[in-house]
Image (cartoon, rainbow, N blue to C red; front, side, top):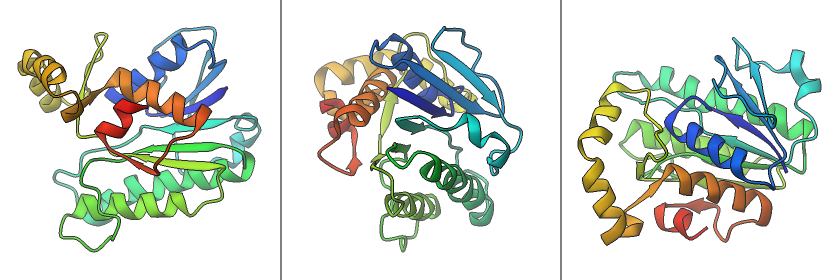
Length: 219
């Protein structure tokens, strides 16, 4: 299976990249981003693009892939809805629109979030925008599309968040997160489980189009 990965430098993306590289069934990973992934592996190729809204110039490098794992995202804190929508909706759909034309048999997996609003009518701005993004992705003619909606994600294997506030949280509550994972496994997921679940969904499908912590962990 050949995979395109967006967001390989983020916390979730780092975890997904790790699982792709250790999975013998994944033969190639193309990491697309504004910066290189920083990892070196025979299966990995970085495609650094300053502009993630346009793919015409690199279309020949994007064909022949079986899955796209879209782990790119930002926090909505302090952002206007228009600015957040441009990065969350417009950028994601720019990539998806380009890929579905080049790889109609592709499975597209999008990292959304717990509480996403599929109605697009709720009071929470980020949830509305995420819901609109999910709905637009599900309407595209991919072979399959799955929306991952994790809640708390436990970083494993030395993976760190690039957001200082989030990293401080993970550092402070690491023992508690480990206890939660033991006492109530579906109250959270992990970067490892996210990556393995994405690979499973791309390879064998998933029973639901929207997957929360419990569904991700089951996969």
